[in-house]
Length: 148
Image 1 (cartoon, rainbow, N blue to C red):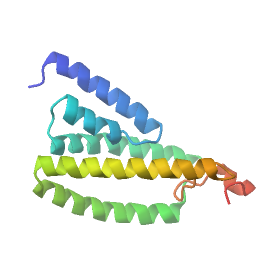
Image 2 (image 1 turned 90 degrees about the vertical axis):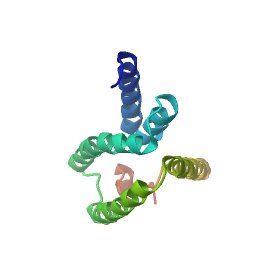
Image 3 (image 1 turned 180 degrees about the horizontal axis):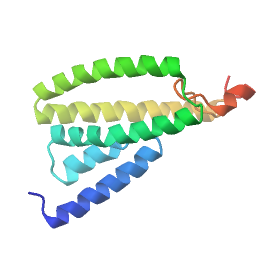
Image 4 (image 1 turned 30 degrees about the vertical axis):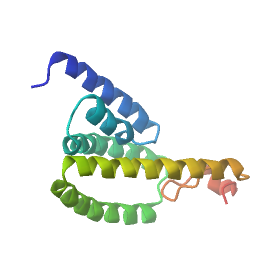
């Protein structure tokens, strides 16, 4: 049973991960480490909680982007289909891994994503347009050929 103090920390963790997710970074980047490192929740449970939180956030974001005609449907379908297949395979793998191994794999994943974002931002600073390239979301700048 979760005590009263723990409820407050869980609400704060959810609030901050929601804000981070709304900014486009991905709430799990913050939520999973907070749940595992600071609140002592097992890695598998933390990742499960993150998935439950991610689904409504992703649906709302997709609806908003779709209404604003910012979604590349062809690329989106490819990503959705491959994402579903790989999510099932990843879930099967995660169920069979020990928590400590899963935690290390998640840490390596976060490090790789952080390095990718770092080098992508360096490239963006050095480029003439300084606009990020995203194959899924069609920027309104594309019609002015700024991002090409």
